[in-house]
Structure formats: C-alpha cells, structure tokens
Length: 581
Image (cartoon, rainbow, N blue to C red):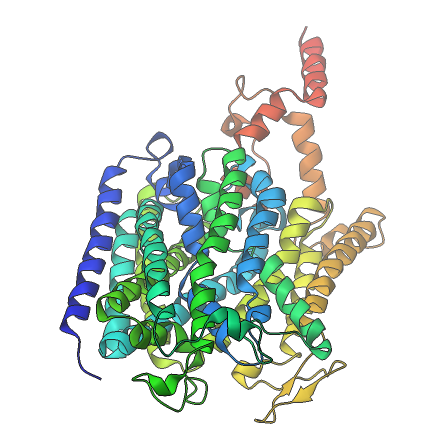
C-alpha cells in the first residue's frame, strides 16, 4: 500500500484545528468557576454548560471510535447483523433512563463527581473501593479506542501504528491538560460535526461503487445483514442489552456532563438530546456495515479473501472508506473516525483524573487542600492516565477484553450501588461492601472469553468454542448485578437491626456505619440552628467522624435551604428562644 502524503497532511491539519479549539476554549474560560473556583471550572465547567454545547459534548462522549467501528462491524459480520448491533439502542435508552431517574437527584444535590454520594453516605473507604472499577472502565476504554484509532489510520494512509497512537494521545492529553471540561466540550462540538459530515459524505460514494450490490436486495437474502437472533441466544442477547442500557449509566464521563449543566432540568434535557444524537450518529455506521456485507470484494483492490476470512471484520469501516470511496473522500472519513476516537478518549482521561483528584486525593487524604493544589493533582493525573492508556494501547494485545471485563464490573458493582445510594433509604457501608464482593465474585467465576478466562461456575446452556473456552448463554451478568443489589439491601438492614436492637455492641461498628452515623444525625438535629446566625465552624467541637468531615466538602446549597425551612429546626429554635427568655 503506498504512503499517502495528502492523507498525512489532512490528519495534521485536522489535529492542529482540534488543538487550536481546545486551547481557545481554555483561554476563553480562564476565569470561569464558582466565585473563582478554578477546580470546579475544570471538573464541571463552572456549572454553566449550555444546552447546545452540552448536547454536543454528551453525544460525542458516547459516539466514539468503538461505537462507530463496533456498530459497522456488528452489521457486517455474517451470523450477527443489525439484530446484534445493540449499542445504538442500548446507549440511547441508557441516556433516556439516566435523564429520567438519575440526572435530577445528582445535579440538584450539587455533587462534583459520580463518587460523591457514595463517599457522603458510605464513607471514604467505600468511595476508594468503587473508584477501582470506575477507573478501570475509563482507562481500558481509552486504551481500546486509541488502539482502534492507530489501526484505522494505518489502513488509510499506511503510517506506523505506534506513531499514530502516540500523536493522537498527545493531542488529546494536551488540550485536556490545558482547559479541562471546557476544552473537552468545545472540541466535542467540532469533532461531532466532523463525524456527522465525514461519514455521511462517504456513504453515497461507497454505495455507488460497482462492486456493491443494492443493500435493499441483500437485506432480503437468507444470510442478510439484518441478522437474526436464534432461540438459544435470546438470554445472551438480553444480558448484553441490559449491560449496555443499565451499565451505560454509572460512568463519570456521563455524570460529568450532567453535573456541569446549569440546572437539574437542563441536565435531563441534555440526556434526552444526547439519546437522539446517538441514534442519528449510528445510521451512517449501520449503512457502512451493510455496504461491506453487500460488496463483492473480488471486484475491488482489496481482493480475496474477504475481511471476515482475514480476521479484519473489526476494521470494516476504514476498509470501506479506503477501497470503495475516492481518495479525498476516504481521507475525510478518516478525519471523522479520528474525531470519534478523540472525543471519547479525552472524556475518559478527564473523568479518571477528576475522580482521583477529588474523591481519592482531596476527600480521603487532603481535605484542606487548596484549589491550586487540586488543579495540579488533576494535571499530573491527566498526563499519567493518558500515558498509561497509550502504553496499554501499544503493548497489550487484549485491551478490548480488559475493557469488556471492566465495563461488566461497572454494571455489576457500581450500578446497584448507585441505585441504593440514591433511592433505597437505610443502606449502609456493610451492605455496600457485601454487595460489592458478591457481585465481583459472581462475575469473575462466570469467565471471560476475551481474556481466555475459564468459568468456575457453569450456568445452564454453556458450550465450548473452537478454542475450548466455555461460553455462557445464561444471563449471569444480570444475575450478578441483581445479587449485588439485593445483598446490599439485605446486609444493610440486617446490620442496622443487629446494632439498634442491641444484639451487637456498638464497639463492633468498626466502620462507623450504623451507631456512629445515627447518633451523629441526632446530635445534628438537636444542636443545629439557622446558618445565618451561627457559622458552622463556631459550633462546639465534637469527635469528628468521616461522614461529618466529608459532608462539609460537598456543595449542597439546597440542603441548607431545606434546613432553614425544616419544621423540626423551627421548633428547636422556638424552644431555644423560650429558654433564653
């Protein structure tokens, strides 16, 4: 394959344009933030991201390289087809459910990251545990899409894969380092426009190629690109569908956009706009997959064997761009794929660094850290996490397998915990830890074919593939998620009953999750008065608990407004005034 100088020039121009937009956004919003809070400006954009930019950045976060390439691959691969291209519907429903049930409570309480409510209710130890699967998901996702980008660029312009991965990662890290969420959001607008334009321009040229049959005709054939779901695979299909739909909610990349919106209502609207955007952006990828399935590759420069036999089905989108479109169109499409990858990679890197800087460094170790200190921690971790994701993309052969496993952990561990912390009253740290461990155990023992990890528990319907790796047809991932959810509730209420009934002495509450927590709540009700009369730091000193010190770091203005109008506190004030008189 010849080296395309014009392709290299096009990529350089595109990358420089993205870098310019990122730096411009950082300069434009240099003094943003709540009362000069630069840390909050970097993490949640000063909470003033508008509908237009917010809708674009939330859509671009989901419409990444894996989303575009994976959808085209699923439609193209014989035996799968459109019926197995679950990402467009799954992620769109995920955004709808997130907007309906999760966006409003998270935004209205003024949290800064997704892990804030966990540390507020369960303490810093549990927040640290939940940071592990959240970090793994973000890091492996960034590594996987960097790897996909390198392979894509090498197909189109025949450049070394390692160089393309390193340069792409450096660009994404650089503008994320400079401007945080502002740079990510504004570059997402440009990138989403490039994705939409680049892919839609490519589709008619690819369809009109002489080697491509009418996709309407091939859809009616027996082995069509529409695909089908066999009766034996229904439960496996449902398991993956729930994984995408429900497991797509508890990601910091999503909640970073939710928490950056100017109001709770705006956060909901952003989710609905992004859901529609995900569906629209999937259409060209679906058509490109159908075009690949309808092509007689022997009549193209690609020749035989076809991409499936060469085990290049995952690269069907760049292959269609390269061999079925004119050179200048394929180069424009390459820019679209590059944009898709960078729009997801920068979000993942920023999400991971935000959680570490706030929930691990600040809330767990340095609660009195200054904004300047937190900003530098974020910058260092953006570089470290970005470099780590790049190294994994270059060195690890099973990046996608690791990402599949980590995304499963997000679904099985974090999603049920998020349900409990937001909607189930009375759960505590003991239940959270038990649910975490049970969910993790059931997922690991179910096996993972991508990592050649054999199962220890064989569920009904399992079978061995050609590599003698056992595949589970039973929806064990959803079973693990439900087990984690109900274990959390059951153990929480059991611990609460045992301590409150006196069956267990208070000294055994070593996590301060039941006895200390409820005595602290009673103390607060008896001693708190209106916040405009007595400043909180002027109250009499008490034994500090982690929940008290953590709560003081959360910006929850609505809670203070509720305190002012609380009937209990009003009666407490009346009694205080009476005693004074």
